[in-house]
Image (cartoon, rainbow, N blue to C red):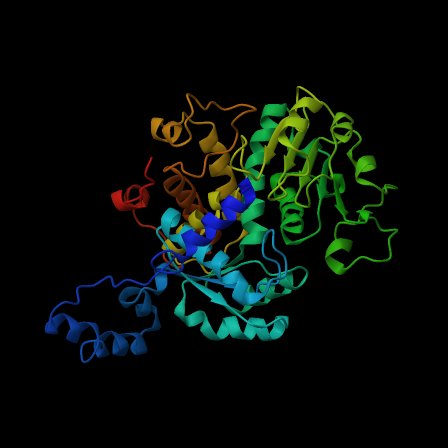
Length: 430
C-alpha cells in the first residue's frame, strides 16, 4: 500500500471510529436532578423565553447564541475536491467546526444546504440566522459566492464572512507584510502578480490595496492567461482587475515582478519564471495539496527567494486556521455587526507582529524544532502557537470598537486579554 492509500485508509478509520463524525453537542449546565431538569426545560425555561420576548438582546444573556457560528456551504467548491455537493461536503464542514472549537473556543454547527440558486441560498441562511452569533460561509463557488456574501452582509446584523475569501486574504496579507519586510521593499511600489481568479484569489487582490499596494500594479491571471481589458470573456469580477498592459501569459506578467501570489493549481510556476522576477522575490505558492512550484525547485531557482506555501510540511505555511477562529472570537466578543476591512487588517497585522516575537519553547516542541527565528525560514506564526487567540482576537475586537462595528465595547481591555488565554483543557497538547 502506497503512502496515499495508507492516508486514505487511516482517514476513513479516523472519521468512522467508535462514534462517526468529529463534533457533538454537550450540555453546559447541570442536569442530573429533578430540580436541574425543571430549570433547564419546563417550567423553568419559560423565564428566559419571556425575558427575551421583552428584550431581544437578552438572547445573548440567556442562550449560547453569542458563542455559536454556523458553518454554511452548498458544497459547490470544496477545497481540493471541487463540486462534490452538500452531503459529501459534510466531513469538511465538521472539520471546520472542530477547528472553531479547538482554536477559538467557539461552538459551531455545520449546515449543508442543498441549494445552488444564490437567491434561494441567501433566503435559507437568513431564515436560520436568529440561531447564530455569526455566519461562516464555506466552499461556495465563484462568482456566486460574492453575491451571496454581499447580500447576507446587507441583510443580517451579525458578522458574516466567506472564509475562502477573507480568511485567505488575512493570512496572505500577514505573510506579505513580513515577506516584503524581509525583502526590503515597500507596499506602495510592489508589482504583484496574482495567479488564479476564484474566490480566494479575488479576495486577496481586493485586499492588497488595503495594505498599500497600488491597484495599477496588480496583474490578475486566470487559466487563459492575463486578465486584460482586451479580452471579451471576462465576468464583472474579473473586469474589476483587467489591466491595460499588453500582456498575455503568466510568464510575461512575472518579468520584473516583486510578488507572485498563487491561489490556483500546481505546476504552473517554473524556476525560469521565478528567475525573471525582481530581486528578493516574494513567492506565495498556495495551491493545495501541491503548490504552484515545488519547495525544492523554488529554493534552487534563486538564493534570494522569500517563499511560502499552504503545506504544513514546509516552512511558512499560509493557512486559514491562523485567521478565522480568532477573527470570529474577537467579533463575537464585542457583538460586532460585521467584519470590516479594519478588523481584517488588524488580524493580519497581529499575525505579522507575532511572527517577529520570540517563539515559546512549547511551540518549538510541537514542531520538533530547535529554534524558529524571524527570517526567510519563518515569517508567519505556526498554527499551534497558543498565543494566537489572545493576540489576534484582541486586535480584531479593538478594531471593531474603533470602527463602530461593535455593539458591546470592552470596558476593561486587560481583563478581556486575560480571558482570551485558552483554558487548560483547550490548550494544544505538545
